Amino acid sequence: MAIQPIDLQALFAQLGNVGKAQAAIKDGQQMQAALQQAQAQQKIEENVRSVNEAQEMGKDAGTIKPRDQKGGAPQGGRGGAGGKQQKEEAPPGDGKPGLIRNPALGRNIDISG
Image (cartoon, one colour):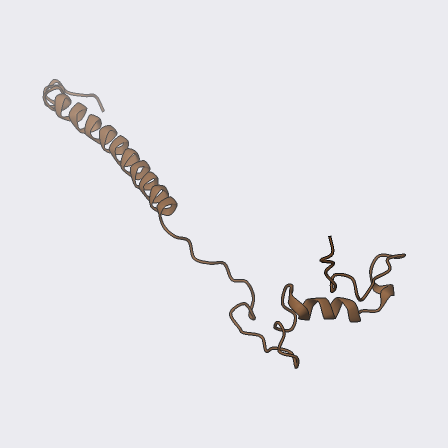
């Protein structure tokens, strides 16, 4: 099936429109990519400026632990009398070998100077 001269006239007349349509499609793709990049950059900046949620620290993270009988620090807490008592009551064989602990160590203050 050959192309007739009348068909060529119709094609040449529409050639400018085809070129404009192809350029619009190409520009549209570039604009869409630039828009997506700008949105991603905006989201990153928003994440940097926002306050992050705290990570889950465990099921007992928000609970208050009861105090021991003597009114000291909470059981299992850091520092305080409760932590020292647990360390002192531990048998000497459970730490580093050859480590000797003095139960009176750290309880007396020498003010004679």
